[in-house]
Length: 201
Image 1 (cartoon, rainbow, N blue to C red):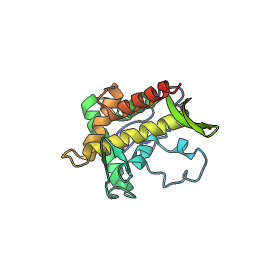
Image 2 (cartoon, rainbow, N blue to C red; image 1 turned 60 degrees about the vertical axis):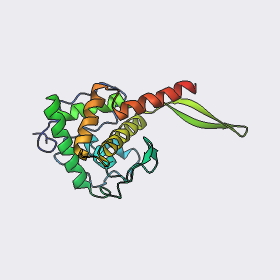
Image 3 (cartoon, rainbow, N blue to C red; image 1 turned 90 degrees about the horizontal axis):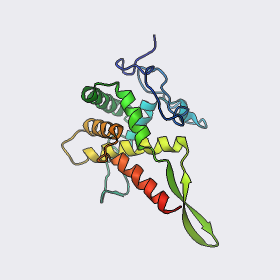
């Protein structure tokens, strides 16, 4: 019998509708999403790390380090290195998502990642000493990384200096992104990135 995530949710019935994501989203049956860094030194090792663990890893950051929404958010390392604390936050967030939607929360997470992953981005190229912004297609692996980063960053910003807990903020962002709600930070960032790429074509 396959393990259920946190002994609650099955990963075997989760559907990935975006074919480009299928290779990079790991839904390996695990009870506790913790690989102990076994894939860290391997090229493309992230492909084998469970998608929920990758979200946990993204939460363990020290804020934004740059102005986002008009201010710099510094969490003073509150979650850095504290993987089991971050894991508990993600578990509580998935509980909340399941309660709100009545669906498998891992499926809702996958939907939110597929909705918030930009397909185009810009890069800087230099011709004769002059720099230009050029639109480029985004690889599936980078699209997934950007979506995970924006969802975790939205949760950190949503709970920073507010009464809302980090797990509540993460549940809000996952639910909104899965529904394609324009109030979602990750959806806004996707639209902004693609708009800049269109203007640079």
